[in-house]
Amino acid sequence: MSYFHIMKEVDYIIVGFGLAGMAFCDQLSSTKLRYVVIDGQRDAASRVAAGLINPVTLKRYTMPYKGEEQFDLASSYFQRLAASYDKETFEILPVLKIFSSIEDQNNWFEASDKPVLRRFLNEKLVKNTSEYVEAPLQLGEVNESLRIKIPQLLNAYIDSLKSKALYYSENFDHSAITFNTNSTVTYKNFIAKRIVFAEGFGIKNNPFFNKLPLVGNKGEYLIIKAPDLNISEALKSSFFIIPLGDDYYKVGATFNWKEKDTIPTTEARDELQSKLEKVITCAYTIEKQEAGMRPTTGDRRPLIGVHPKYPQLALLNGLGTRGTMMSPYLAQVLFDHLENGIPLDDEVSILRFPKKLV
Image 1 (tube, rainbow, N blue to C red):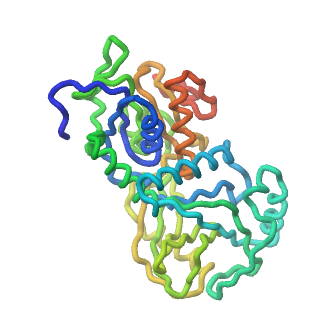
Image 2: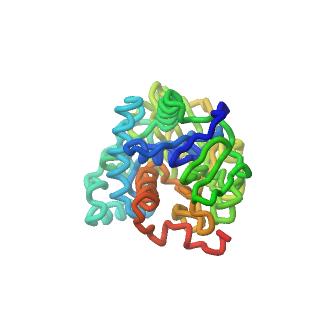
């Protein structure tokens, strides 16, 4: 890392650059606040995530925490970033739900009549036109769903940060933090008002926050090639099939609460193949298998806020399985808390776990 030999003063040091880190950078970019990013994560969950923004939980037909507000903010945020950095990273992608039973189909009709869901669930079913897709009960269409090509967008944003000498690619050394008497913090050759940790599952190596109940959830995906499948919408059953173009599709994901690594497994591959072959009937080849650790909490709520003992340290974590949609909203909430003193909701604040922060 090519630090300056003289001390450099900034307002923020952001540690980690996945969806959370990028969203917080974006909050700062529209201000005069100075910041740098230190990022050593090579296997962040953001880089293997499907990037699908679907505002409704299609298993139970419910809207997640502040779901509509999050969706609207995420839609405008990613569309703006795509216009600025890489236009190919944002696309409108319809999602079609494959019903598991008549009861499931009836639940769709009931949900599509609810005011909170009516905007997103089309009450008129879509006829299955693919001879290679098993959907005897027709399909439910999700309105306004999006897909973000996350790795490409992260790389484009990083290139922009590098051009301004704001990005340092190196593992963060937590032991190098010094707390100053004037309420600032020193890290190597930087003096900052705050450090915002957006490390994802890397929080387990953070001595200030590693007692928080971020349990992690390993997710695996397959990239397949299926020339005969020829679908342009994402299919949702108990898993997703997402078209990537040129006959490639992303299939996933698994949910493994036991393993805490990013090594692809034969068990996950077999599970996904078994599910896939109940939905599609054409030939395919597996081109790649990916794995990532989602930063998931036991209560399925984010972890954001300021350390009660070290107010210079803040956390933006626990985005879980809906990190793509949640990241711009949570970054805004944390920014408003840090800069404008707006209180955090109890259900997202790290202070709901006071005994884990001593």
